[in-house]
Image 1: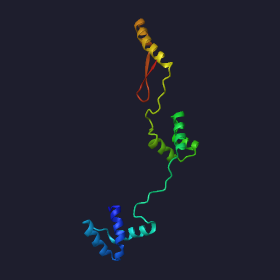
Image 2: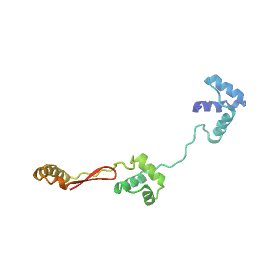
Image 3: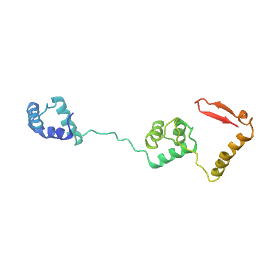
Image 4: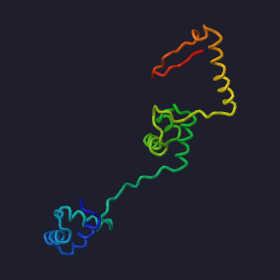
Length: 161
């Protein structure tokens, strides 16, 4: 694979009009095998057509910040919503929504992404629960018998009190 500098040198050497002479000059300067005649001609034609020997990359449009934010709010509002449904709602291509979700927002399916925020009134409730449970267990022998543990589909235990 030739570098951009080597390609530019080949295009400049095209004044020789002889492919063999150009290949010899290339080998003399870079001390490596010269490109074949077909590649030299392609580089020269590309330079004449575009003015550059570098690769052209697609003219894909970037996703605007407003579309990114609308996709983020759609998934924060309802995280279980499918990519297809969001793409229909936002009138964006499905592939664009998928790319925004995975690459820009770094959100992946089946992993915990959005946590429920703790509110100020939750702290006393959690404290009361932690203090109350040992008392309940110590008071009555049949309290633990009333607690049933059910296995969920994903093997995460659920407790029903």
